[in-house]
Image (cartoon, rainbow, N blue to C red):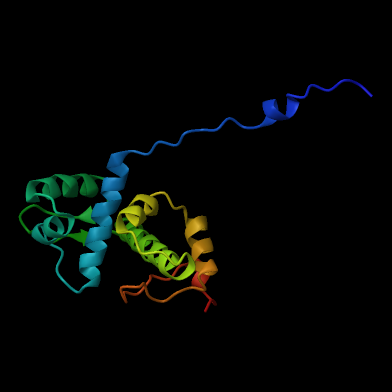
Length: 161
């Protein structure tokens, strides 16, 4: 038997990597989530309704809508004041709503803690599809959140409860 370096296993471990996301990416997701929510309520999506929901000034909304339009996530023309989502924007907005509502169910039903909306908002942006589907499955595919809003269905729900 030869001598083995006790640090070999440490050397083989992967370095911990620090993941840093941009505030811009989270901001885009918040806008798409807000637009999705307003539309879900059956309202026209207007600059003023987005500004009110996100508690920001209307010029900030207009600026972001131009960025979202450039990224092909929304359809927006300054003069019309009505915002529509593209297929890509709709998918992101729906995913953010789904993440939020599943996290609320997790807190209330599984963890038995008070729903902390600030914490939910912090976590929802970092959930990958595989995590969201696993969480949904763990929670037995809930159909609504604690606030009685429907939870958008995912691939994991096909044939689920």
